[in-house]
Length: 213
Image (cartoon, rainbow, N blue to C red; front, top):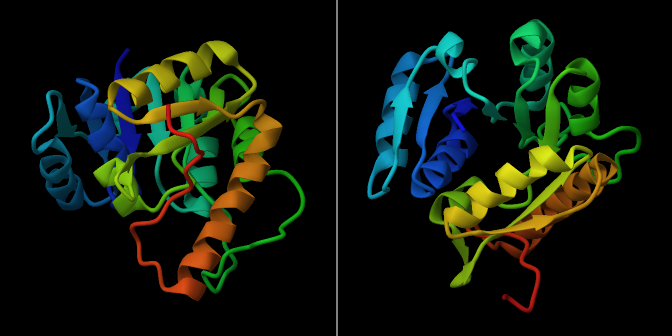
């Protein structure tokens, strides 16, 4: 399965690295081509796969595409490229934040993932990678333990390859149920963000389900 990532910021770079650790050749695009080149080099280092900088058109050819942009930008991207994304598996990594940038903890209504799925009805949309800081995802471990990645979605046939890729990267992919649970995952992530700030935990934190194994 061909793999692509849209967005070469910290989360996009981290997701691309995990796919490369799984042995994949990953296409990475960003509105800044220079950032995509730098992120691809950093994500590729020490992996058995590779990350290559591409333009958006090149990434849209992939069968599985991770969306690693801001919430508004992601939704706008999906709406604009709805036709090209038809038949693809889309991984949504976003978490809703207020205009100030503060976590929208307690937010009601549909999850960002459900909004994306509604905007791209011919795509299979799953939620993943949103419950860990980008630095933690890049490292693949939290407090010395393998990182857990919760995967929610209605299409089981789409969740299977996502979880398999996560496991091959050395992480632990966990089926988090239907797409409606994406809202729960977003709130888990936002609570984690608030606790990180309150407790001064730094950006190496994530949510881990114990026991491991």
